[in-house]
Length: 239
Image (cartoon, rainbow, N blue to C red; front, side, top):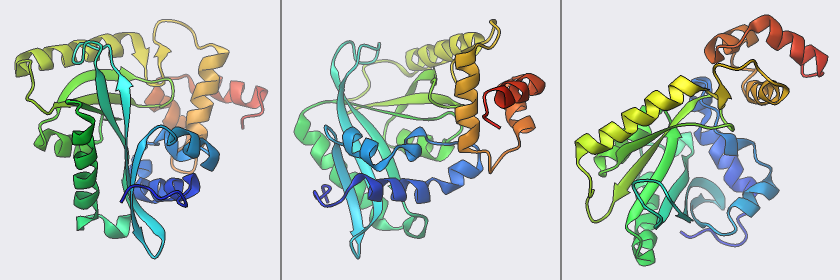
């Protein structure tokens, strides 16, 4: 159902945290899981939010927003941005996901918009597979300053993709080459020394998953000097 007024951000947050526990174990830490309940309420203010409820508890959620997109696949059009897909573990593999998705698709059709895009972690292959089955295509490779992993943008055209598969693949591979050449995960420039702002981002990312990964392993993953990472952390009371 569309989210009732009495369902607040803290209930959405709790559902997301439960649903993405397996991803956190793989080192995929979704940034929005760490929003406060108030930040969730603000984020959802201009969004279409749908929830599945059992005994007045949120067991699943899906959201979409309408955004202006100037990228090559939209050329300045408004697009649907799908986000916050989450089903609590005990209900995964049931009809909860399908029913929420069907409801969201129904509302998307009412908007009249014909382009749907989503963002997911580079190695979140399950979501990519589901999107591809529905006609989604990889169109862009992304390094975000808000995450410590690369992400991919997938797009679905409801009237059929106006571009060839070869062209979509070319644009995706080109963006992947450029991003991996210039940026480390976390959007840190590869060929410049780490700055205070870079270290702060790294420690913010690391502290989200410090119970899952050792600092030394984290530095290896991010291509960061472990000794300098520890030195900066101690200096700024991060460790």
